[in-house]
Length: 224
Image (cartoon, rainbow, N blue to C red; front, side, top):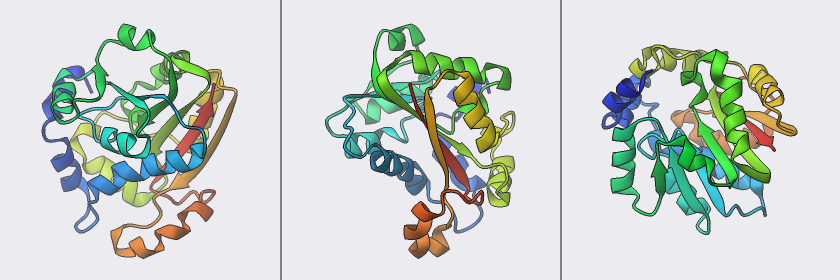
């Protein structure tokens, strides 16, 4: 999608996403929160002092970053000026920019890329990862979350969602290859979101299912 298209969806992103979900399965808040909760668990005692939400949009993840990492300085980057205006109105304590040169002058302990890279041209994905690695502090970490293309429900939602019309999903294996090609020293990964809302009582089992390629999404934790 172009910058103009992202601007177009800025105010209605959540509503369009909910409409793309099958009846009874929409949980916009849960989908945003689980990523940050998982990050906090994986980071354990490593408390980041500065975090960048790369491709933050209107700020769906930022309130959860503030909640789970209250001592961290939170930043957001996005190409959509309209999305950043909404985020600034709702989250006055977050530093926001659509200028990568401004971001490049900072150093981050953690970079989050939540369902962003499927919007990036495949030929540019590794170089974009390299740009994110360049703003990480020594031993900084990047968390990439993406849709699992082998999950039929995920694919159904993806194909119904208008702002994903020109996007292209990629597998966990390809994401791990990209991490190595971008120069990250190590990576850990796993699948997530195994149980939809009607089976929410089973979600406590998800940490032991990370190796099963059945989850609706996956994550890659990369270290610089």
